Each structure stands twice: as C-alpha cells, then as structure tokens.
Length: 362
Image (cartoon, rainbow, N blue to C red; front, side):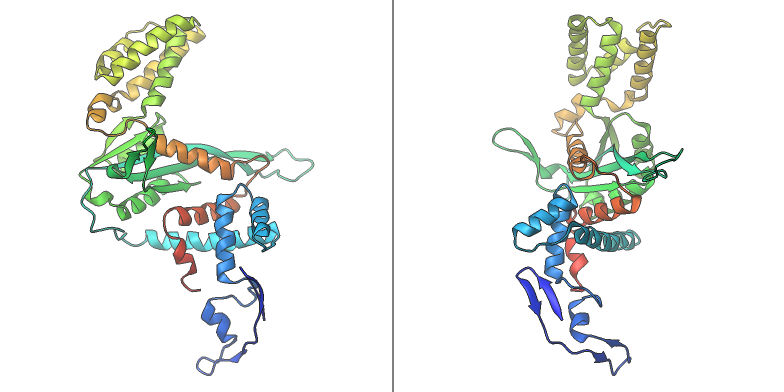
C-alpha cells in the first residue's frame, strides 16, 4: 500500500488476510496504526492538516499552507478530513459530558476567584432556499453562536507594556441553546479548577439569556454587567436626553461613568430612574434605557469588584468572539449546521487540550 506522509509518499508491502482469532478479514498493520480500510494519509499528516484547518481562514488557505510544506492536498480533501475528525471530536465531547470531570491540575492551590464570561455573535448559514434559482424560502439564515470563557484569577497578567494577557483559559462555543453552552462550559471549568475556587464571578452584557443561564447553572456566583456595555447604554441615554448635543452628552455621560467607577452606582441608577420621558421617539429611547438599567441594578458594583483586583470587563470572551469570526465569518462563508459543528468541535479540541485524544488509536 502507498501512504501519504509528512515526508512524502511511502510505499509499503504489508500482509492482508483473515484473523485466526475472530476470522475477520483485514490488514494487521492498518489496524495496529489505527488506519481505516481505505485511508491514504498517515495519522501525522492528518493531524497536521486538521490543525492547520482550525487556524487559518478557510479550507483553501489550509491547502495552500500544506502545499508550502511540500504536501499538496486539495481543499476538498481537507474539508472531508475535518468533517470526519470533527464528528469524532464532538462524539468524544458528548461522552465526556456524561462523566464527572477530573481536575487537570489537582495539585494546584485553590483559587481566590474563578471567572466565567459569556457572549454571543452571529454566523451566516445556508437556509432552505440555498442554491435554488426560484424559491420563496430564505437562502441565507443568521444564527447566534454562543461563546463561553473560563479562567482562574491567577491566570491573568499584564505584559511590561501593560497589555492584559491570560496564561491559560477554556473557550467553548455552541450553536445550541444556553443550556447546552452552560453544560459544556461548566464541565470544562470544573476540569480547570472551578470546584475549588473560593468565589465565582460571571460577567456578560445585558442580554437576558446570559443571566438566566447564570441563575440556573451558577446561582451561587456573583454577577457583573460588563463595564463597557454599561457605558454604551449610558451613551445612548446621554445622547437621547441632550438632543444630539454631543458636548452636553459627553459631560453628562463622563460624570456618571466616573461615579460608577467610584462606588456611586446607586446614585447613578436613581438619576436614571428620575429622568423624564416624552411620548416621542427620543422618549421611547429613554424609557428603554431606564428599563435596561433597572434590570442590571444588582450587577453594577464595579468599585467593590475592582478594589479586590478582579476584572470588571468581559474582554476575554469578546476577544474570543472576534477570533471566531475570523475563522467562521469570512467573506463568502455560508455554513451548514453540521459543517459548522464539525469544524467547531475540532477547534475546541485544539483549544481545550483534548487534541491528543483524537489520535490515541493511532
């Protein structure tokens, strides 16, 4: 048989026949190496191609990269490889979720704080009318992808230049409902040390599903509205109240941002609640923002959190969403649900240190 490898084609003379023990027909060396009956690439080459496919912007780019290291492969072959390995990765994930997680570093001291951050973004999917010349059905559909990030407080640091970095983190995403995200994120977080953390902090924007998930999955945790998102809503409110006068809106907003950062959130909330609104479109905006802040009033104790050296922003999950969009939301990319799920499962296996499990049989 000829096997494509990272050093080029390798021609082998191998035995093929009937196993005397269970009488099945096969190739012993293929079975020993974990190769399927017609597999033409070595596990090492498959691993290298699959790894590249999760990092670069498209299957075509992965094929170009392979050609650069003298392993020319058609992008359709890489696509088929990702579908097979991604399906395997998702099956392994589902099997893990049925078992209690084992902490990856049990010798580590219990953490002061575990952080969970949740957000969402939208990806382009092929609708029921995709590829049809005449149809009343949608050709393209946009579906929310839900992301979650977990890390321990001591895994956050800053470079000499002041840039925030994480030495380690878990990144989870799903097309499913928030319950699915919560199950996956919780399992990975327990593996990362959540169970021994003294306190838990959940950060997110103001969307309802995040806080419903927090209440169901981590009811004992503290909740905090991301400071930047709260600021954006203050800007909406300031501009609505000052009729487009940017100078007055800026002064009004910056005063309240300062108060929020210095422990005067109750004063700010009372000021917002006391604002008068008319029946105009501007008044409707004011009422909308008043309702927003009323719903977030118990999640805005920024100074108390910051004084303990803890994060008051959900930057890591925002960064995760932006990185995902570089791979899953490129120009012209339209996904099937299964195609997205397979690449996503493979990518998460790489990110969350499950990659080697895909190759154990090989």
